[in-house]
Image (cartoon, rainbow, N blue to C red; front, side):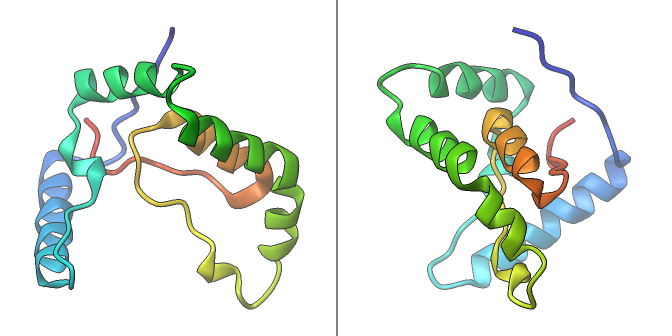
Amino acid sequence: MSVRVEVLVDEADRKAALRKATLRGLTDTPKQIPAVWLYDERGSLLFEEITRLPEYDLTHTERQILEERGHEARAFKRTPYSRALRLPPTPNATRSRAFERCGQGEWRPFGRR
């Protein structure tokens, strides 16, 4: 497996984004912290491997939906409601790539180094 991690922000920007996401998440109801902040590079690679297991059905189902019905998401993107369709932060690059292929744009994991 080959994974390329590209740093798109400097450390100060990354820390500021983490602080902002954490403060926002801890004032939400229910409280939450985006999962993207909870994985280091090794954890992200491990999660990626886990999602490839046959037992991890959710990722396979999501990928199948995106591959079979991605054209609908692409059409939806051209409507005033397109802001409602977003890829949630995830360390799962496979799902992100599938989402990109259906025309939703590029996902850049801001929390990764």
